[in-house]
Length: 327
Ligand SMILES: Nc1nc2c(ncn2[C@@H]2O[C@H](COP(=O)(O)OP(=O)(O)O)[C@@H](O)[C@H]2O)c(=O)[nH]1
Ligand SMILES: [Mg+2]
Ligand SMILES: [Zn+2]
Image: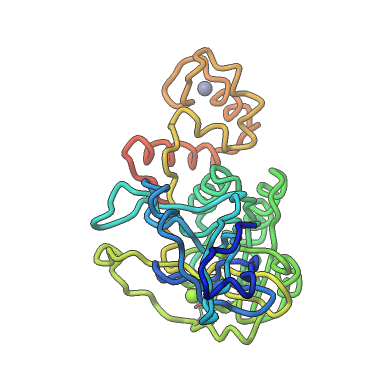
Protein backbone atom coordinates (compact mmCIF):
# COMPACT_ATOMS: atom_id res chain seq x y z
CA UNK A 1 0.00 0.00 0.00
CA UNK A 2 1.25 3.50 -0.72
CA UNK A 3 2.32 5.53 2.26
CA UNK A 4 -0.09 8.17 3.51
CA UNK A 5 0.77 11.64 2.28
CA UNK A 6 2.60 13.63 4.94
CA UNK A 7 0.06 16.43 5.08
CA UNK A 8 -1.09 17.69 8.48
CA UNK A 9 -4.77 16.67 7.93
CA UNK A 10 -4.03 13.01 7.30
CA UNK A 11 -1.13 12.60 9.70
CA UNK A 12 -3.41 11.44 12.50
CA UNK A 13 -5.16 8.52 10.75
CA UNK A 14 -3.78 6.33 7.98
CA UNK A 15 -6.04 6.29 4.90
CA UNK A 16 -8.48 3.48 4.26
CA UNK A 17 -8.11 1.47 1.06
CA UNK A 18 -10.90 -0.72 -0.31
CA UNK A 19 -11.18 -3.08 -3.25
CA UNK A 20 -14.23 -3.07 -5.43
CA UNK A 21 -15.84 -3.41 -8.85
CA UNK A 22 -16.75 -0.45 -11.04
CA UNK A 23 -20.46 -0.83 -11.77
CA UNK A 24 -21.26 2.53 -13.36
CA UNK A 25 -19.36 5.29 -15.07
CA UNK A 26 -20.20 8.72 -16.35
CA UNK A 27 -16.76 9.34 -17.71
CA UNK A 28 -15.64 11.42 -14.74
CA UNK A 29 -17.26 9.61 -11.80
CA UNK A 30 -17.29 5.89 -11.14
CA UNK A 31 -19.58 3.97 -8.80
CA UNK A 32 -17.47 1.33 -7.10
CA UNK A 33 -19.23 -1.59 -5.40
CA UNK A 34 -17.27 -2.44 -2.25
CA UNK A 35 -17.94 -4.46 0.88
CA UNK A 36 -19.04 -1.16 2.41
CA UNK A 37 -21.54 -0.39 -0.33
CA UNK A 38 -21.29 1.75 -3.43
CA UNK A 39 -18.65 4.48 -3.24
CA UNK A 40 -18.73 7.27 -5.85
CA UNK A 41 -15.14 7.67 -6.95
CA UNK A 42 -12.86 9.75 -9.10
CA UNK A 43 -9.81 8.60 -10.94
CA UNK A 44 -6.27 9.87 -10.68
CA UNK A 45 -5.25 11.97 -13.64
CA UNK A 46 -2.26 9.81 -14.36
CA UNK A 47 -4.39 6.87 -15.56
CA UNK A 48 -5.78 9.12 -18.25
CA UNK A 49 -2.32 10.05 -19.45
CA UNK A 50 -0.99 6.50 -19.50
CA UNK A 51 -3.69 5.17 -21.80
CA UNK A 52 -3.46 7.37 -24.85
CA UNK A 53 -5.41 5.19 -27.25
CA UNK A 54 -8.50 4.51 -25.17
CA UNK A 55 -11.20 7.00 -24.30
CA UNK A 56 -11.82 5.50 -20.86
CA UNK A 57 -8.99 4.17 -18.72
CA UNK A 58 -11.47 2.71 -16.23
CA UNK A 59 -14.41 0.66 -17.48
CA UNK A 60 -17.34 -1.03 -15.77
CA UNK A 61 -16.29 -4.45 -14.58
CA UNK A 62 -12.83 -3.25 -13.63
CA UNK A 63 -11.53 -4.36 -10.26
CA UNK A 64 -10.01 -1.35 -8.55
CA UNK A 65 -8.48 -0.20 -5.30
CA UNK A 66 -9.86 3.04 -3.94
CA UNK A 67 -8.68 5.33 -1.18
CA UNK A 68 -11.52 6.63 0.95
CA UNK A 69 -11.46 10.42 1.07
CA UNK A 70 -12.58 12.54 4.03
CA UNK A 71 -15.88 13.32 2.23
CA UNK A 72 -16.63 9.56 1.83
CA UNK A 73 -15.95 9.63 -1.88
CA UNK A 74 -13.24 7.41 -3.30
CA UNK A 75 -10.10 7.97 -5.28
CA UNK A 76 -9.20 5.11 -7.61
CA UNK A 77 -5.53 4.48 -6.90
CA UNK A 78 -5.10 1.20 -8.75
CA UNK A 79 -6.76 -0.62 -11.65
CA UNK A 80 -6.20 -4.35 -11.39
CA UNK A 81 -5.16 -6.27 -14.51
CA UNK A 82 -8.10 -7.22 -16.75
CA UNK A 83 -8.88 -10.79 -17.73
CA UNK A 84 -10.64 -9.55 -20.84
CA UNK A 85 -12.61 -6.65 -22.19
CA UNK A 86 -15.17 -5.73 -24.80
CA UNK A 87 -14.39 -2.63 -26.83
CA UNK A 88 -15.52 -0.74 -29.81
CA UNK A 89 -14.17 2.11 -31.82
CA UNK A 90 -15.05 5.41 -30.24
CA UNK A 91 -17.38 7.66 -32.22
CA UNK A 92 -17.49 11.37 -32.88
CA UNK A 93 -14.55 13.51 -31.95
CA UNK A 94 -12.61 10.57 -30.60
CA UNK A 95 -12.95 8.43 -33.69
CA UNK A 96 -10.11 5.97 -34.03
CA UNK A 97 -9.73 5.54 -30.29
CA UNK A 98 -10.86 2.45 -28.48
CA UNK A 99 -13.77 2.64 -26.06
CA UNK A 100 -13.85 -0.13 -23.47
CA UNK A 101 -17.47 -1.11 -22.90
CA UNK A 102 -16.91 -3.55 -20.05
CA UNK A 103 -14.09 -5.55 -18.50
CA UNK A 104 -13.75 -8.93 -16.79
CA UNK A 105 -16.73 -10.62 -18.43
CA UNK A 106 -17.32 -14.27 -17.60
CA UNK A 107 -19.82 -15.14 -20.27
CA UNK A 108 -21.58 -13.47 -23.19
CA UNK A 109 -24.99 -14.86 -24.15
CA UNK A 110 -26.33 -14.45 -27.66
CA UNK A 111 -30.10 -14.44 -27.28
CA UNK A 112 -32.30 -15.57 -30.14
CA UNK A 113 -35.97 -16.53 -30.36
CA UNK A 114 -37.47 -19.47 -32.23
CA UNK A 115 -39.99 -17.08 -33.84
CA UNK A 116 -40.82 -13.39 -33.88
CA UNK A 117 -38.07 -12.68 -34.77
CA UNK A 118 -36.78 -15.92 -36.21
CA UNK A 119 -33.33 -17.27 -35.54
CA UNK A 120 -30.48 -15.51 -37.28
CA UNK A 121 -27.50 -17.88 -37.49
CA UNK A 122 -25.34 -15.11 -38.94
CA UNK A 123 -25.80 -13.11 -35.75
CA UNK A 124 -24.88 -16.10 -33.60
CA UNK A 125 -21.71 -16.84 -35.54
CA UNK A 126 -20.57 -13.23 -35.60
CA UNK A 127 -21.25 -12.92 -31.89
CA UNK A 128 -19.27 -16.09 -31.14
CA UNK A 129 -16.29 -14.77 -33.10
CA UNK A 130 -16.52 -11.44 -31.27
CA UNK A 131 -16.55 -13.22 -27.92
CA UNK A 132 -13.73 -15.63 -28.79
CA UNK A 133 -11.53 -12.84 -30.14
CA UNK A 134 -11.97 -11.10 -26.79
CA UNK A 135 -11.37 -14.31 -24.81
CA UNK A 136 -14.90 -14.29 -23.44
CA UNK A 137 -16.90 -17.50 -23.21
CA UNK A 138 -19.93 -17.32 -25.52
CA UNK A 139 -23.23 -19.09 -24.95
CA UNK A 140 -26.55 -19.30 -26.79
CA UNK A 141 -30.05 -18.77 -25.43
CA UNK A 142 -32.93 -19.88 -27.62
CA UNK A 143 -35.98 -18.08 -26.20
CA UNK A 144 -39.74 -18.19 -26.86
CA UNK A 145 -39.81 -21.99 -27.03
CA UNK A 146 -43.54 -21.73 -26.26
CA UNK A 147 -43.94 -20.42 -29.81
CA UNK A 148 -42.13 -23.36 -31.42
CA UNK A 149 -44.16 -24.94 -34.20
CA UNK A 150 -43.86 -28.65 -34.87
CA UNK A 151 -42.61 -28.04 -38.40
CA UNK A 152 -39.68 -25.99 -37.05
CA UNK A 153 -38.67 -28.39 -34.31
CA UNK A 154 -36.12 -30.34 -36.38
CA UNK A 155 -34.38 -27.10 -37.44
CA UNK A 156 -34.17 -25.84 -33.87
CA UNK A 157 -32.88 -29.21 -32.67
CA UNK A 158 -30.21 -29.18 -35.40
CA UNK A 159 -29.16 -25.67 -34.46
CA UNK A 160 -29.02 -26.62 -30.80
CA UNK A 161 -26.94 -29.71 -31.61
CA UNK A 162 -24.59 -27.78 -33.88
CA UNK A 163 -23.57 -25.27 -31.21
CA UNK A 164 -23.64 -27.71 -28.33
CA UNK A 165 -21.49 -30.01 -30.45
CA UNK A 166 -18.96 -27.21 -30.87
CA UNK A 167 -18.75 -27.02 -27.09
CA UNK A 168 -20.92 -23.97 -26.48
CA UNK A 169 -23.56 -23.88 -23.79
CA UNK A 170 -27.06 -23.78 -25.30
CA UNK A 171 -30.15 -22.99 -23.21
CA UNK A 172 -33.78 -23.15 -24.28
CA UNK A 173 -36.03 -20.73 -22.47
CA UNK A 174 -39.54 -19.36 -22.42
CA UNK A 175 -40.74 -16.51 -20.31
CA UNK A 176 -44.30 -17.73 -20.97
CA UNK A 177 -43.96 -21.41 -19.99
CA UNK A 178 -41.05 -20.85 -17.61
CA UNK A 179 -38.90 -23.42 -19.39
CA UNK A 180 -35.21 -22.89 -18.70
CA UNK A 181 -35.66 -19.74 -16.60
CA UNK A 182 -34.22 -21.36 -13.48
CA UNK A 183 -31.33 -22.78 -15.51
CA UNK A 184 -30.63 -19.34 -16.91
CA UNK A 185 -30.72 -17.85 -13.41
CA UNK A 186 -28.16 -20.42 -12.27
CA UNK A 187 -25.99 -19.60 -15.28
CA UNK A 188 -25.97 -15.92 -14.29
CA UNK A 189 -25.29 -16.50 -10.60
CA UNK A 190 -22.00 -15.10 -9.27
CA UNK A 191 -20.77 -14.13 -12.73
CA UNK A 192 -20.54 -11.03 -14.85
CA UNK A 193 -22.62 -11.75 -17.93
CA UNK A 194 -23.36 -9.98 -21.17
CA UNK A 195 -26.81 -10.58 -22.70
CA UNK A 196 -27.06 -9.53 -26.32
CA UNK A 197 -29.32 -10.12 -29.25
CA UNK A 198 -31.60 -8.45 -31.75
CA UNK A 199 -34.49 -6.32 -30.54
CA UNK A 200 -37.59 -8.30 -29.63
CA UNK A 201 -36.03 -11.69 -28.84
CA UNK A 202 -36.93 -11.26 -25.17
CA UNK A 203 -33.71 -10.16 -23.45
CA UNK A 204 -35.42 -7.75 -21.07
CA UNK A 205 -38.28 -10.17 -20.42
CA UNK A 206 -35.83 -12.95 -19.56
CA UNK A 207 -33.84 -10.78 -17.21
CA UNK A 208 -37.04 -9.63 -15.50
CA UNK A 209 -38.05 -13.27 -15.14
CA UNK A 210 -34.80 -14.19 -13.38
CA UNK A 211 -34.74 -10.96 -11.34
CA UNK A 212 -38.12 -9.21 -11.11
CA UNK A 213 -36.56 -6.30 -9.25
CA UNK A 214 -34.78 -5.17 -12.39
CA UNK A 215 -38.04 -3.85 -13.82
CA UNK A 216 -36.65 -3.58 -17.34
CA UNK A 217 -39.03 -2.23 -19.93
CA UNK A 218 -40.16 -4.80 -22.47
CA UNK A 219 -41.98 -5.00 -25.75
CA UNK A 220 -40.67 -1.75 -27.05
CA UNK A 221 -39.98 -1.47 -30.71
CA UNK A 222 -36.66 0.26 -31.04
CA UNK A 223 -37.03 3.11 -33.49
CA UNK A 224 -33.81 4.79 -32.44
CA UNK A 225 -31.74 5.85 -35.38
CA UNK A 226 -28.36 4.55 -34.36
CA UNK A 227 -26.64 6.60 -37.01
CA UNK A 228 -27.66 9.76 -35.26
CA UNK A 229 -26.34 8.69 -31.91
CA UNK A 230 -22.69 9.63 -31.87
CA UNK A 231 -22.33 10.45 -28.24
CA UNK A 232 -20.34 8.08 -26.08
CA UNK A 233 -22.63 5.79 -24.14
CA UNK A 234 -21.46 4.06 -21.01
CA UNK A 235 -22.50 0.61 -19.98
CA UNK A 236 -23.47 -0.24 -16.43
CA UNK A 237 -23.47 -3.45 -14.43
CA UNK A 238 -26.87 -4.43 -13.06
CA UNK A 239 -26.35 -6.18 -9.73
CA UNK A 240 -28.30 -9.44 -9.32
CA UNK A 241 -29.76 -10.11 -5.86
CA UNK A 242 -28.60 -13.76 -5.99
CA UNK A 243 -25.04 -12.74 -6.90
CA UNK A 244 -23.44 -11.54 -10.08
CA UNK A 245 -23.91 -8.74 -12.57
CA UNK A 246 -25.45 -8.33 -15.98
CA UNK A 247 -23.90 -5.83 -18.36
CA UNK A 248 -26.50 -3.37 -19.51
CA UNK A 249 -25.58 -1.44 -22.60
CA UNK A 250 -27.58 0.05 -25.40
CA UNK A 251 -24.52 -0.19 -27.63
CA UNK A 252 -24.20 -3.94 -27.63
CA UNK A 253 -24.70 -4.13 -31.36
CA UNK A 254 -21.51 -2.22 -31.76
CA UNK A 255 -19.25 -4.72 -30.03
CA UNK A 256 -16.82 -4.81 -32.86
CA UNK A 257 -14.26 -7.15 -34.25
CA UNK A 258 -11.55 -4.60 -33.68
CA UNK A 259 -8.30 -5.33 -35.45
CA UNK A 260 -9.16 -8.85 -36.50
CA UNK A 261 -6.98 -9.80 -39.45
CA UNK A 262 -9.09 -11.54 -42.13
CA UNK A 263 -6.42 -14.25 -42.36
CA UNK A 264 -7.03 -15.11 -38.69
CA UNK A 265 -10.81 -15.40 -38.86
CA UNK A 266 -10.74 -19.17 -39.43
CA UNK A 267 -9.14 -19.69 -36.03
CA UNK A 268 -12.36 -18.50 -34.38
CA UNK A 269 -14.47 -21.17 -36.09
CA UNK A 270 -13.68 -24.10 -33.82
CA UNK A 271 -14.54 -26.83 -36.28
CA UNK A 272 -12.19 -25.35 -38.91
CA UNK A 273 -9.14 -25.90 -36.73
CA UNK A 274 -8.29 -29.48 -37.74
CA UNK A 275 -8.07 -28.35 -41.38
CA UNK A 276 -6.35 -24.97 -41.16
CA UNK A 277 -2.87 -26.36 -41.62
CA UNK A 278 -3.72 -28.53 -44.59
CA UNK A 279 -4.53 -25.72 -47.02
CA UNK A 280 -2.03 -25.24 -49.84
CA UNK A 281 -1.35 -21.64 -48.83
CA UNK A 282 -0.41 -20.89 -45.24
CA UNK A 283 -2.33 -17.58 -45.40
CA UNK A 284 -5.38 -19.17 -47.04
CA UNK A 285 -8.63 -17.33 -46.31
CA UNK A 286 -10.64 -20.42 -47.35
CA UNK A 287 -12.48 -18.37 -49.93
CA UNK A 288 -11.14 -18.37 -53.48
CA UNK A 289 -7.84 -20.22 -52.95
CA UNK A 290 -7.19 -23.59 -54.64
CA UNK A 291 -6.53 -26.73 -52.58
CA UNK A 292 -8.28 -25.40 -49.50
CA UNK A 293 -8.76 -28.04 -46.80
CA UNK A 294 -11.60 -26.09 -45.19
CA UNK A 295 -13.61 -25.98 -48.42
CA UNK A 296 -12.92 -29.69 -48.86
CA UNK A 297 -14.28 -30.32 -45.37
CA UNK A 298 -17.44 -28.36 -46.25
CA UNK A 299 -17.88 -30.47 -49.37
CA UNK A 300 -17.51 -33.64 -47.32
CA UNK A 301 -20.10 -32.44 -44.83
CA UNK A 302 -17.58 -32.18 -41.98
CA UNK A 303 -18.27 -28.45 -41.68
CA UNK A 304 -21.86 -27.22 -42.13
CA UNK A 305 -22.75 -25.00 -45.09
CA UNK A 306 -24.39 -22.60 -42.65
CA UNK A 307 -21.23 -22.04 -40.64
CA UNK A 308 -19.13 -21.72 -43.78
CA UNK A 309 -21.58 -19.16 -45.17
CA UNK A 310 -21.31 -17.18 -41.92
CA UNK A 311 -17.56 -17.38 -42.20
CA UNK A 312 -17.61 -15.94 -45.73
CA UNK A 313 -20.01 -13.16 -44.69
CA UNK A 314 -17.81 -12.11 -41.78
CA UNK A 315 -14.72 -12.35 -44.00
CA UNK A 316 -16.38 -10.00 -46.49
CA UNK A 317 -17.27 -7.53 -43.78
CA UNK A 318 -13.71 -7.58 -42.44
CA UNK A 319 -12.38 -6.81 -45.90
CA UNK A 320 -14.86 -3.95 -46.10
CA UNK A 321 -13.88 -2.66 -42.68
CA UNK A 322 -17.33 -3.37 -41.25
CA UNK A 323 -16.46 -4.85 -37.92
CA UNK A 324 -19.71 -4.63 -36.03
CA UNK A 325 -21.60 -7.55 -34.62
CA UNK A 326 -25.05 -6.37 -35.44
CA UNK A 327 -25.21 -6.63 -39.19
N1 LIG B 1 -44.33 -15.91 -26.45
C1 LIG B 1 -43.27 -15.36 -25.85
N2 LIG B 1 -43.08 -14.01 -25.91
C2 LIG B 1 -42.00 -13.49 -25.30
C3 LIG B 1 -41.06 -14.28 -24.62
N3 LIG B 1 -40.08 -13.47 -24.14
C4 LIG B 1 -40.42 -12.22 -24.51
N4 LIG B 1 -41.57 -12.22 -25.20
C5 LIG B 1 -42.26 -11.06 -25.80
O1 LIG B 1 -41.44 -10.55 -26.85
C6 LIG B 1 -41.52 -9.13 -26.92
C7 LIG B 1 -40.13 -8.52 -26.82
O2 LIG B 1 -39.58 -8.79 -25.54
P1 LIG B 1 -38.42 -7.90 -24.91
O3 LIG B 1 -38.07 -8.51 -23.61
O4 LIG B 1 -38.79 -6.46 -24.91
O5 LIG B 1 -37.25 -8.14 -25.98
P2 LIG B 1 -35.82 -7.43 -26.09
O6 LIG B 1 -35.96 -6.36 -27.14
O7 LIG B 1 -34.89 -8.50 -26.54
O8 LIG B 1 -35.46 -6.91 -24.74
C8 LIG B 1 -42.43 -8.71 -25.77
O9 LIG B 1 -43.70 -8.51 -26.29
C9 LIG B 1 -42.40 -9.90 -24.83
O10 LIG B 1 -43.57 -10.01 -24.08
C10 LIG B 1 -41.27 -15.70 -24.57
O11 LIG B 1 -40.52 -16.49 -24.01
N5 LIG B 1 -42.39 -16.18 -25.23
MG1 LIG C 1 -35.00 -4.98 -24.16
ZN1 LIG D 1 -8.12 -22.81 -46.84
